[in-house]
Amino acid sequence: MNSQNLDFSFYLSLFCCLHLWLLCLFLAVKKNKGITDYFLSAFLFCFSTIHLQHILLQTGYISHVPFLDPVMGIILSLVGPLFYFYVRSMTGEQNLVQKLKAHLVVLIPATIHLCYLLITKKGMQLHDYYYKATDDTAQYTLINVLLLMAMLGYFFFYLIHSILVLNRYAKRIKEIYSNIEKIQLNWLKDLIIILMLFACIIAPITILVADTHISQLSIGYFSTFIYFIIVYKSLNYSVVFSPAIQFSGQNTHPPVLPHHADTEDTVPAAERYTKSTLSNEQVEEYGHSVEIFLVSNHLLYDQNLSLKQMAGALKMQPHTLSQVINRYYNKSFFELINSFRIEHAKKQLVQITKLNYTIEGIGYSCGFGSKTAFYRAFKKYTGLTPTEYNAYQATQ
Image 1 (cartoon, rainbow, N blue to C red):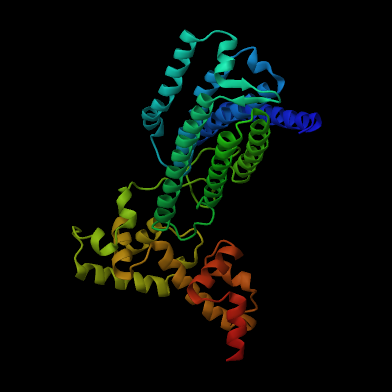
Image 2: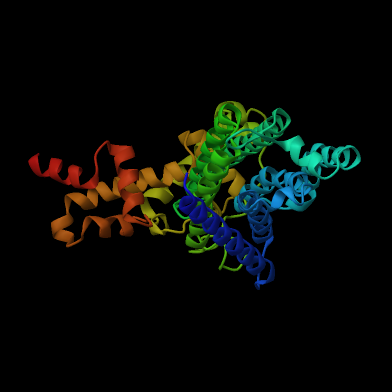
């Protein structure tokens, strides 16, 4: 790699580092900030250490202040748990600060390692502890490779658990909301997958190549790529500039969901409610009431229809209605509402010329929040897109 590329990589990392710090400062001082803003700010600050280390390695400054390496290792130890709790806060989970304290044990190994180095190493001895010089370039020592692998390993551990949190969240919102497009957080799952790729790519580069010159560039460019995705997605989904309030109406912030046992998501309805006080006769009776609501109440086509809203209309408790839907229909609230909306959409599509509607207009009139959500649901329940269904009906 020539010096021109190195210069470009250096200035790119410098830009990202400074921009991340400004973003962290903004998140810390903005009005109406919430716990999500704090976790995002802390995560971005710790993540900026990757860029800072890249800058210091390129300039050679890190060799003059050798203890910066283990100190930054302590800071980077927080990247995993902070991102994990950022994900949990995005799903509306409460009281996370107390729960985070237990995860700070991840700092203990890096802190003990720093204390050991402070006692046993001096000056350039520490630089030699991390890097070994060859004829052409510097390389990582075996101990440095092992430390980096350990850090990547538990970061990967937190990413896996973040995916599990999002999977549980995706199932729970289907029990509560009829329109989940704005709150399903698929973009966050995509970001986690990219971070996993980052960990998987850096690992072989560090172990097999062990060349600081190559790893500096690879880590610098890849972390810059991740940086742009984090900032773009955060801004695009109003994480940074919106007030920290709970999901309501058209707001894009995550809802506060009722607590469920983690195992409940995977247990069939017949087993989940074995200890329920609601008898089969009551489920049957309530099930008929739900069916009457679905075929006669125009609230069905309200884009913001929720389990609580429907339960109020039926004069039931939300948890009772949820149980009735699970047991009587063997579906989630989201699946039930959308299946009836699709049936109504099919009837309207047959009369689309008479109604003077567009296909997209029919989707909105049936309660779908976007053309994409309508097409996805229609394809799922009929095997055809609305356009294909229209063309098929025309040939009958």
